[in-house]
Length: 264
Image (spheres, rainbow, N blue to C red):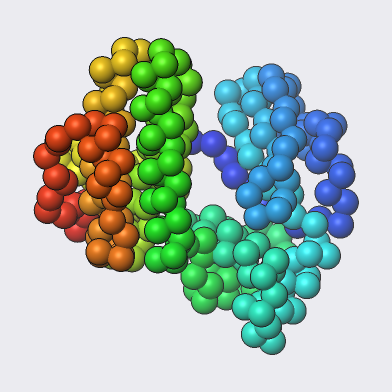
């Protein structure tokens, strides 16, 4: 933890509506509030984000107690895999908590439950089928970007380049590192620390609002995606060569493989 870190809490409560407003905040800090946001979060729960005048940022994930009680019973009797909604929520919970946590209040039953979730549940992961589906979506968005560049809609193209193409590459990279039992974080966090320079160069871009620059960046993202997908599913997914040639013309084939074994 450093000066740029926030403070994360998970609160299990029978009264989640209390956190919809900021009236409870003085319980943890009396310096005053700069901003209070209450919104939906992954895993079907809600999250309150508080920016305090003291300079601290606090995230509070609010979990309805009744839902977690049901999940705890399902885990106890090994039924959670058979109930998709519970399985998905616990996968998300395991992903978040696997980075480390400390139980402040709750007792032995909750400690045992959290320990079981972290140690026994795989977490939010991608199957080979998921990876292939993401790759198919990538191709569609890649072609969309090229058309928008040709039409002169450069800002729209740049938006999808970052929001879709790069995001898909980061998701697949995250899954690949997990499969190789390497340290990885979602949302492209700490990639600069984890990857060696050559691999970091492969999955990063720096595009300006120019048509040629956007096309080059999209091409680079496509090359990275092809390599990453091949590392997971091999030749079970292949980039449609006709689309590649149609949009970009002759280009060097992506070769080799990405070496993700280095780093923490």
